[in-house]
Image (cartoon, rainbow, N blue to C red; front, top):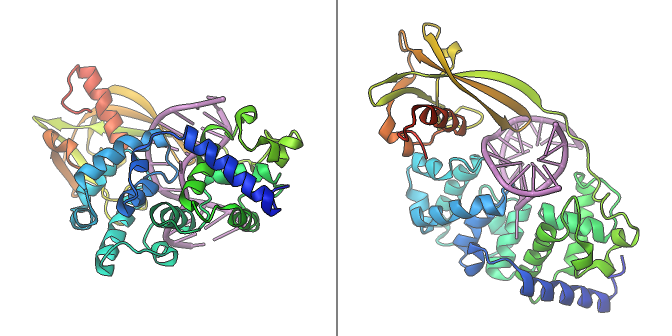
Length: 343
DNA sequence: AACACGGGGTT
DNA sequence: AACCCAGTGTT
């Protein structure tokens, strides 16, 4: 593209920042430069939409106002605060990093040290360094990558490390040394609200006259998308086994590959002696590349094997409950016209 | 480089 | 029904 000459780089920065300052969304984490708050927001926003993160962000900061509370929290509290957001390794890494920060005696203030925190990769390190500390490191998330791919009419697959390096190098020349945090956020904001994947809003884009893809009329084709494998369909059954004020459940151990520490409803395979009763509901749920149909049944326990617990229904809101268990219990509550279980 | 990891809003 | 989201860690 044509922005490589200094004069054009300045025009690029000026247009982008002017646009951002005028049209940026008022987001909770944009009201502070406290590295703790910026960090929490960046972790929450990993692969997570802004609208989904906002209510979690507010609640999380109330419950864990600083590194100290986060570092010393019981893990179940942490998981309960994160339940429903997904990617639960983020919550665990958050606490590991909080302990590191305490050991360091404060939040690390340079890019390399921030990058070493658990759960902080290239993007997040650059985002924190630039937004909280004003350091000049380009932060390329999915939005920024899309914007830059279009600006340069990038032909390569954006999944490849070569192409990513090329885009980072490009961003490194563009980034405004005086306002790196704003610059990074502006690029991401542009990708989030204007340079969107499907129908980019080129007429209102402050950069459209500098955009190579636009000049070639190929803005909708770029960046190149690689087809992903089609999801697998899986049917599963869940059992609702109750006694007064209690429900039978089990907890995933730390060894569980996913959802470690979360409480689940039993499945028939785990309880061979269970007597399956009436069907309560069917709901669907997607995890990564698998589409599940969960069939929920009432049942009675027979003999209760090791590892199962009669969980108090009152405590359901205090423990980390998997989303599938929550959905099943919501079905049950709807059916009984009673809100004991639910949110 | 490829894969696993959650969940849900948007198109 | 895809697509994809302010990605990271592991293999």
